[in-house]
Each structure stands twice: as C-alpha cells, then as structure tokens.
Length: 392
Ligand SMILES: *Cc1c(COP(=O)(O)O)cnc(C)c1O
Image (cartoon, rainbow, N blue to C red; front, side):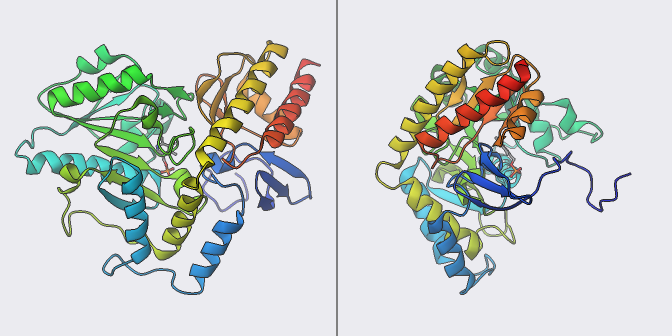
C-alpha cells in the first residue's frame, strides 16, 4: 500500500510542477518541460495567460460565488456571446464535461416527455466514445475499463459504429430520442467524423425527429481551428456540450441548445450550485475574448498546418516508431505509434516534452492554441531526440 492518503485512481508520474508560462512548465527540480498536453486540452491559452490572470484576479477581489438564485451578469454576457457565435439560443453552465453531458441527456428526455412522447428516451452513442465518469456517462461512453465493477449499468444507450451511417440507421426505433457524438473523438483515438457522416446524421435525425447532440468537451473552443468542430461539416446540432478549453484552466462547462429544445427546462427542472459562478464567468469571458479576436482562429489553423507538416516529416524519418496518416483536426492531433505509445510518451518526457496517449496506440497532442511555429519546431526537435534514444 502506498503511503498516500489520496485514492489511487491515477498512476501518477513522479513529477510535480511549480509554475507555468505559455506552453512551458517548470518542475520542482527547476527542469523545464514543453507541454503539449495543456492539462488534457484545458489550458487552451497556455499557462497563466496574462489576460486570464488579470480577469481572475480582478474578479477575486469582488465576488467569488453567489447562487443561481440571483442574477449573474457575466453569465448572461458569456451566454449571449456563445449564442451569437453558434447555433444555440440558450446555455446552461456547469463545472465539468460529464455534468454538461448529464444536462444534455436530461434535456433530451424532458424534451420528448413534454412533447407527449415519453416513450422516446434512448440515445444512440458510438464505439470509441468517451463522455465522462458519472454512472450514466460511463455507459454512454465505450470502453470496458471505465465501467468494470459498476453494474448494474445505466439503461438507454445503443452503440453504433463511428463513421458508419447504416449502423446508426439500424438502431433507430420507436424509443430513440437522440444521437450523441463527438465530432472528433479524443480518448477514443483522435478519430474525426467524416463531414459526410455528420451531414448524414443530421439528415437522419431530421427524418426521424431525433435530437442531434454533439459532445465538444474536447473538440470545442477553437481546438480544431473552428470555434466548434461540427462547423467543419457545415451542420447544426440541436444540443452541444463543451468544457475543457472553455475556462482555460478554470473548471467551466456548458450545455447549449436551440430554443425549441431548451424550452423543456423551466425553474426547478435542473440546477447546479457551482455552475456559472462569477469566477468561472470572468475567466470564461476572458477566454472568449481571445478565441473571438480577429485572426485568432486563422492563427490556430496556420500553426496547426505547420506542426502537422513537421509531424508528417518526422513520421517519415522514424517509421519504426511513428506513422501516418495523422489523425484529428487543427491542434487536436493524433500521431499513430508503431511501438507502444507509452514508451514514446516516457522517452518524450525524459527529453522535456509532455505528450498524451489515446486509444489505438495513438500519441495525442493537444498543445495550447497559442503555441507558436517556433515552439512547434522545438517540440519536433525534442520528439526526434526522444525517438533517437528509442532507436538506440
Ligand atoms: C474530457 C471529456 C469528457 C469528460 O469531462 P470531465 O470534465 O472529466 O467530466 C467528456 N467528453 C469528452 C469528449 C471529453 O473529452
């Protein structure tokens, strides 16, 4: 037994950091690391972005927490801005990805209940999906390791193949309410839904009166070079959940929906103590300032193209260890490993570069959106050095 009093839900690296700036982290021993994990896609503006620090500090001296019993003007403001920039008409703020997905699943049930179709309560989900760690979302998601030991399992989910529209159609029945999909799967191996598949899902949802719900907890907030990844396919969902990058490191998530769907919630139908608190709203608005600044998304696309070209080049130089094609979109990058991805992650860490894994033996890169081409080049250099030691 370890001498830690923490529950051992994580096999942690023996590595702890004291501070960070931009894409850089400094460890306790003074060593610097180039961070391509960004707290699993959370620190979208890097560590300690001055605009975010300023917003948090300013709010910290005014008001930390209220309750949703009172008006919170910054909540109204961020909701206005999110709705102006997306398909959505209404927003409900929460604190984590799983909570945002729970909100979406509850909203779908209530929507059909009020529509006089309470028999419609099932949701079509996908192979390789990840939607969070609550008793419901571990079943909405795929993956035996997340649900092992947690029987009985939440009912109401039917699993289709990713990018296979016939497998979705085959699951639609009189009880189907919604389709829930990650436009780019993160944990599931950085797999992108084909635009044609997303368009076919929209058409199928319309044909059968189903809600199309996108989980953009990881793919949202500029990660793929669009504000939300579903925009690449030109479709509009009925419900969207997001988290990770939305608060830039402050716990913040949201469930967004069209008026038609969101109107199913009235006072008392759903709630949260912490969701949408003034601190989170101050930082969320500051993140949104940067995300929507003129040219920012172009910059994300440009650095992503640059980084991806370098990674393709690297894959050709080290075919024993890494390969093609690269997965994902924008700065949500999956690099196929040909040796165990955990070995490469460790070698990278030994060379001062932090990277992630994903299913399918993928090396997952989720750098801060503010990474520069020069920093991307440095990351490629460190990765090459790491791969050199593996070859030896
Ligand atoms: C991370 C993630 C979640 C869960 O978010 P939590 O904040 O850990 O609850 C849900 N869906 C997707 C797609 C994610 O990447």
